[in-house]
Image (cartoon, rainbow, N blue to C red; front, side, top):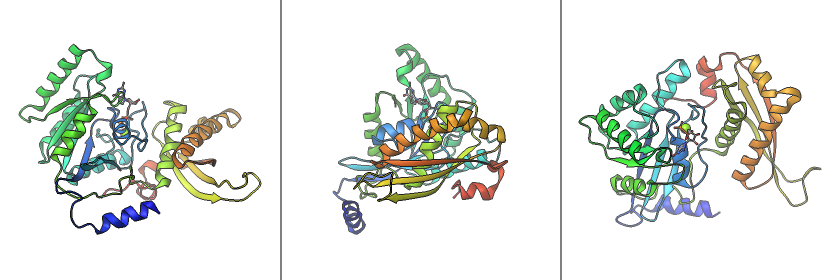
Length: 324
Ligand code: GDP
Ligand code: MG
C-alpha cells in the first residue's frame, strides 16, 4: 500500500522535490572481480547484486537505487568488461558498452591491490572514446599499505594520460571513502525529481534476484568446478497459505527452480554424493532468500543438462541476457 502511494506521488510530481534535488544514472564499469557488485551493495545498504571471488559473476544489468535527502543515484552494475571468448562473453561486453551510452556519469572501478594490466588499458581506451564524465574509484584500499596505494594511484594516473579523471580511494569492504564518492557523484548529476520510490533499492524482479542468490551459492559451494556454464531459471514462485507443513496463520513461499549446466559431469558435481551438494546449495540459498523476502521459504531445485546453452541465442534470450 505504502509503495503504491509513494509511486503514485512520484508519478504526479512534475516539479523536482526541491529545487536543488538531483537524480540520474551512473554506470559502474570495471574489469571482472574488482568489486563492482560489492560496492553497489555497500552503497545501497542491502544485498542487491551477487558477489563472488570467481570472476564474471554478474550477468544481467542491474539498477541499484541509492536515495539520499538531496538526491537519487541510480547505479547500473554492469558485467565486467573483458575480452569476449564466446557468445555470452560478447553479449556481456556489448551490454556494458551500451550502459555507458545511457548514463550521466561513468564510475570506473579499479583495484589498488594490482598494478594496471591489459584489461585496464582496454577499458581506459573505451572510456577515452566517449564524452560522459568519468570518476575513478580505486577499490580494495584495505588490502594495501599507504605506500603501495600511492604507487598504484600513480600508475593509474599514468595510464589515463591526458584524461584528468578524479581518483577516489575506497574500500567496498569497510566503506572507506564511500561517502566522499557518493557526494561527488551527486554533485555531477543533473537537477531532477525522485525517479523511484525511496524504499526501492533495486529494479530487478524478485524472480531474477532469487535466481541470482541461488547462482551465487552454486558458485561459492562448488568453487571452480562448475564455472560459468551454469544458469538458474525460476520455474514457479507460489504463496502457500494452508497445507500440512505450514503452521497456522503463517504464509510460506514455495519456489521451484531449475539449474542449467552444459555437461553431465557438471550435473554430477552439483548433485554430489547422495545429493549432498544440491542439499547444501539448497539450504544456503533458502537462508538467503528467506532473508530477502522476510518469511519462510520452501525451495526445490532441479538440475538439467543443456549442452552449449551459452552459445544458443534463443536460450540466452529466454534467460534474460538481452542486448538493447
Ligand atoms: P565484480 O566482479 O567487480 O562485481 O566483483 P565482486 O563485487 O563480485 O567482488 C569480487 C571479490 O572481491 C569478492 O570476493 C569481494 O568480496 C571482494 N571485494 C570487493 N571489494 C572489496 C574491498 O574493498 N576489499 C576487499 N578486501 N575485498 C573486496
Ligand atoms: Mg559483479
